Length: 204
Image (cartoon, rainbow, N blue to C red; front, side, top):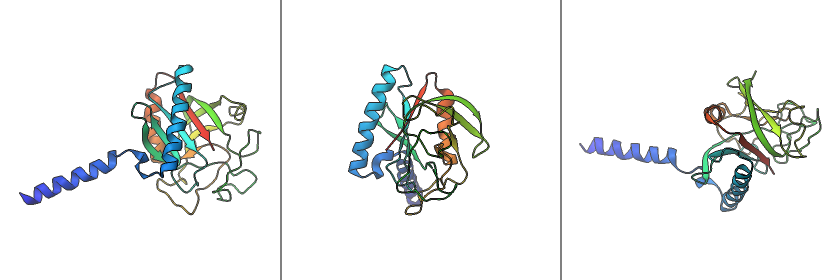
């Protein structure tokens, strides 16, 4: 009997860890930063009739070897899930990690840089990478207005790990926010079910 009770306790502890708020592992400064960004994101979504249940936040100030993409739950005001995310290589070699600490951002076509700003997650399509799913990203600001022209999409990439690799970085692509396969699979389920546009916000 004691054996079964011990197993039950261990299971409960494991389940609690899985469902713990994703911000629990953040520094106080980063947690406060994400709370402030999420509040601004929610205000934008309410004003523009976007989905007010969740959004996607990507903090490019965080080292690329750490989880910096957030599936943000507005209702619980916390990160439902965190994942790894790549950024653009710019003039550096593709798939390298030259700018793992300080990405370079640009809205210029063929710059191979990521662009900061708010995006509308648009049409679902087929990707050559990761789980073979992508979403067109429509830039909503002057800093990312060329996103569609540049073919910037949200997709996964098998070279982006599901776990943190800091102080190493993750491979850098040509400007798309490329996330890990597990994170993309979770996002895909949420995005497919959304009846309203979803906000994706890349900031630094």
